[in-house]
Image 1 (cartoon, rainbow, N blue to C red):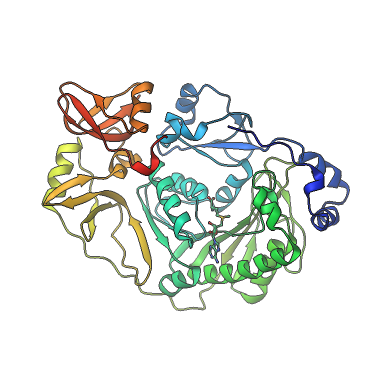
Image 2 (cartoon, protein in one colour):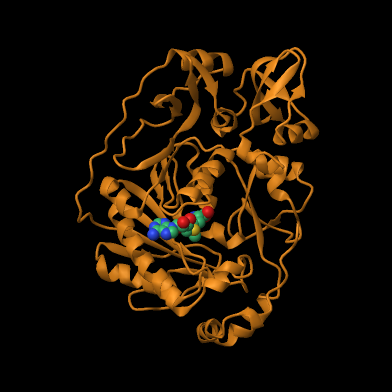
Length: 454
Ligand code: SAM
């Protein structure tokens, strides 16, 4: 795989450079120098599935600690094909630029809470929030773009998340249903991506002052919807991967002007540096990360809602049921069947760690763990059932595979297996990466077609 070359400064928009010089002043030369450095590549250990120590034993490359979190590491920018490794496909880690992991540390999610990740795809921050929730509470993971929402779903599945409701809706649509529901909301807003220029040449091509202004208008609208969905005492974290004041401090200033119920809190973290004073925003309370620090660039602000001017929307629940086929399948497949709600959507069956919710006129991609589909009265299991971290160590029928066998599975091949029958969890060193259906001699591959290695 080709490695991205350092950015020639000549390709940068002169207007952008002028604005950066005005923002950074004497640090501007250090910023220019950072453009010639390789990107800060990051890896976050998915502690839903593995400990940091255990993962280190399985990897052949170095994990360098960062100030962001004990689970976030910097890795060599030259490493290639990490997204295809057995450990990545098994959801043991998420590749995430180091500073991108800062916002969830500020959000500080707690198990048992209702947390909305409003702009969630591809899922870096949602999978990080889920890790901290430890399967307890509800993670509402939403993405407006249908194609990106499918990628979000796949990443949540790979990382073994069990307690998410994945939706594809606009913030305004969600607001109609969810006013006053959330303990915490993350708005990782669509932005002009100035911190991504080294990684994404498209962000560089799209940049203009007019684009920055348009992003700022859209961000103000998104945070306004987010504020409504917080409950009293609820926490909002706003983040971007851009440097422009219009998309950062000025969005927060605007929010504080329009919402006297909101209070800016200190981010209270040791990484990054203060931001800029701007109207009602005190720079020392918000956090910025520049490439001269640790990571490519991020802005984070934390706010609390101190009163509830709007009326909270009623919470409706879906009817739950017990399917005979599901009960039989679970008692065959798991050593111990955990207490979970059973929910269905047409022929698709789900196991949900919370009482399933009814959301009207909102596209729900998944609620809880996708167990499988009923076809002609039989249950055909789904990949999610076998890779969720909630059932780690619980599968009754397992087949331990070596690296080579796992790779054959990821390519979609069948493989010989003697004396194994029926649906079987495939594991490598105790962690399940998929399932096959065995007939005593051969195992039929059930790895989702879209994920297979070509
Ligand atoms: N939080 C994600 C992560 O960590 O993987 C990255 C989110 S990205 C910065 C912003 C997302 O906002 C994009 O997926 C984009 O499709 C979405 N978006 C675009 N326009 C939006 C809008 N008007 N309202 C809400 N989300 C929007």
